[in-house]
Length: 94
Image (cartoon, rainbow, N blue to C red; front, top):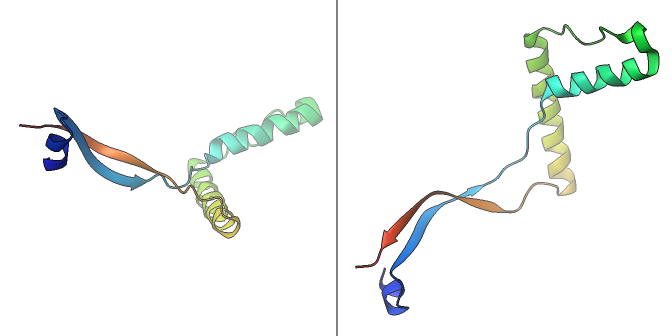
């Protein structure tokens, strides 16, 4: 607050610095894309391919895909190296 006052500011912001982390893979979207790819190649033969995968199996696949992506991103340096500011609060200089 002292620095803000010295610089003639009437307010400033504070917050927490938070790593953005890795994006997550949605396994249901991956399965949908694979189903569409197969339909594009094999037409009606693949119409129902991967359409009825139980949620439990989708969650398991999602866990594996995200774990593999994390290892790959860490190995090749594709982990985001920036942060965001969370819980910002404006402080008025008195």
